[in-house]
Image (cartoon, rainbow, N blue to C red; front, side):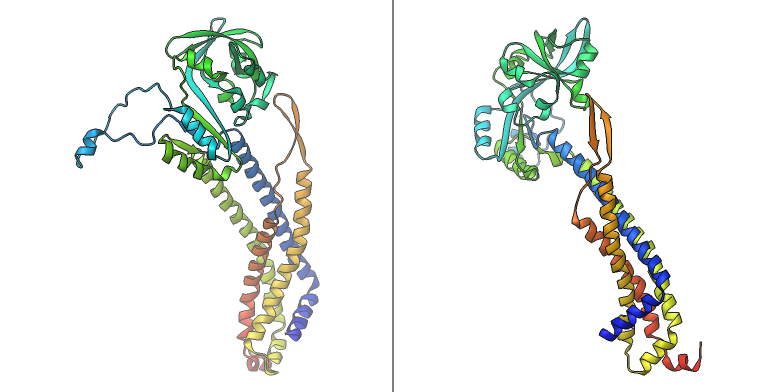
Length: 413
């Protein structure tokens, strides 16, 4: 085996310029593959993190996933009822105190209840449709990131009591209202009530900034004429990945629809999977192109060293030794290219991590590109490179192993 390694090294060193070009080709492929994977994975992780942070991990509503069975269906097995209009139930979640106590007893995270009602916000002759959300300020702080998104006023002003309301800055702009102005909230039942703007928030999501208003839970219950009612429970978990299990157990116990954030964003997560498949397909294609350079070198060596191969086989080297010799040469070039590619990839990723740009939102915020530092990217890129090198080396090695030494020595073609 040592002799085969020495011969392989001699063959590679004998074609220094071509070997260097092949190594550089593999290194560039590995380096750019690592940089592309780090950038795309970082963007995906950042997107998923924002997705997780801007919504509850589990959302329980007063809806039922499946309509309750009717008495006729219980009595007659062949009975099937369709198109049944559900009876309007304004009670929300039945026995909310017991449900909240049960959830807080085992859920590894924060739980907050609220009452969401559709209504209209009026000011100076202008109307804006909005979701009027009644919350408990202390509980809401644990589940909603909106408490950190205020540009004027603060979320804590809601805790002071009274008829205070928090609205988005986009809604305030449409109404022409500002901090401290008094606006009128009108519920779907026609009941109206005046509120004083105690804070303006900006989340960056247009639907929320122009379509949500927060008031105390008690005020929302009075405005919608639903005393002591809640129609939504939101849960923020310590581990977001546990959301499906928590949602399943909650729905089985309470009977109300409990939706994990993965279910609510199923189409987006599926798109990310397809995006990853495309990314790694491109990485494999880059390594395949680099493999052609290795194939070219090994093919040239087997052609030029035909007489050497014949002599070696005449001295007792088996076909397996010939295959092993040229396969080692291909893998050696791939391994050298991978090592230099790792250095190039690390340098590119580090350079991308230093890129700074400015985003003008509520102010000017200096932001960096989202980069994922993962050793897995280096292993995958090197794995693709070594696999391509092994295939590129095996094909000419197989041909060299089948050469007949007698025909070569006699000068036969």
